[in-house]
Image (tube, rainbow, N blue to C red; front, top):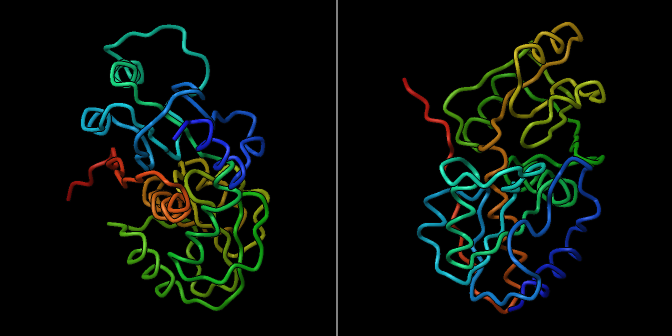
Length: 241
């Protein structure tokens, strides 16, 4: 298929124009006129993936490889070291990031993975009401997201409402009205702020909460007459005990 055909399908699925201003969703590497034989689906593109990928392929990721302007291509540094191999092997890259968060991924993780019934999806934020004990909610998150440990801010024994943003969503804290906010990449000062505002927060991990992009996207790509290959990148963090 031509990349232009795949791009058009993805744009209809989750319009690129809905991405955040700071984002770089869309065609990161390649040409709309290129023809590809297969599509690799992954959260990120990493060195192992591009080294093992077949030439004349498209990699479809959640996270863009290129953020901001590139002032140099130093092949000893990231991401230039990966871009060099992709160009040599004629491998293209399309990213579906904040546009796909809004249209599909948050809802998919909230309902299909965690099993909550979403009451509302406001931009990035999925919310619902219910009745959970702290221990019960923590067990759900640990088991469904395969978390090795749970980091909690301002724990509450009983929770009657949840809000969730996959990836890194702590900057949305002031707009959250739920008892408990689930997101990743919670920093120290985010935690201090949440505690002062009596907001419970649980860190569900960036990689752990967004790795389901592959499952969600692969279902949609089945509609295209091209081979889709699940080839998820590895979590860059290791957890030592």
